[in-house]
Structure formats: structure tokens, C-alpha cells
Image 1 (tube, rainbow, N blue to C red):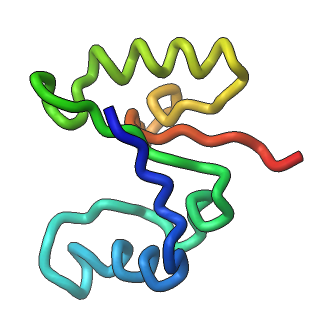
Image 2 (image 1 turned 180 degrees about the vertical axis):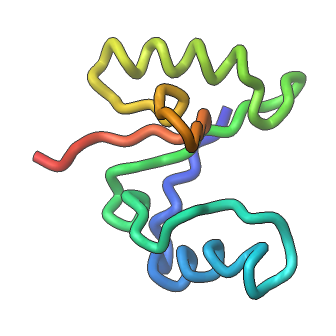
Amino acid sequence: MSLSPKHIDHRKRQKYLYEQGRTQPGQIVTWTLSSNHKSRLAWDVAVGPPQSLYDVATLSRIGAIARKLGITWGGDWVGSIDRPHFEVKSN
């Protein structure tokens, strides 16, 4: 498993990701320009081999642990489910 904080060059990176699948080649990978990744309150988790990158069973187990710790899990969202996504609220 690896964590992807997505905060390096956050504005440029978020703009690049938002344009992907819209004005640039590739699949759409984000639905917002105002991501909590920019403020370092969110991160994504990628599962390592032998499981697939976004293995649902593994992410669901991690999500259950996160819930117990008071961390918001994107797998609990209604509509735009984002299982690899986790975030906390600012203090």
C-alpha cells in the first residue's frame, strides 16, 4: 500500500488533473478544482500487489478502520464514491 498526499505544486497539479478527460487526453480523474488535497487534509491510498491498485475489499477494510478513527472515507460518500480517498477536518 502507498499513500499519495497530492500536495506538491497543488494548484498546478489540481488544474492538470481537472483538465484530464476534459480539455486534455485521458480519463476524468477528479471532479473539482477545490480539493482538500491542496490543503493537505486529504490523501489517497493505493493498494500494492498482488491486489489491484484500487482493490475494493482492501480499501473497504481500511475505510472501516478510518471511520473508527474519525477519518472521513470517500467510500462512504453518496453519489461520487471515491474509495481510495481519505480526509480529516481542519482544527
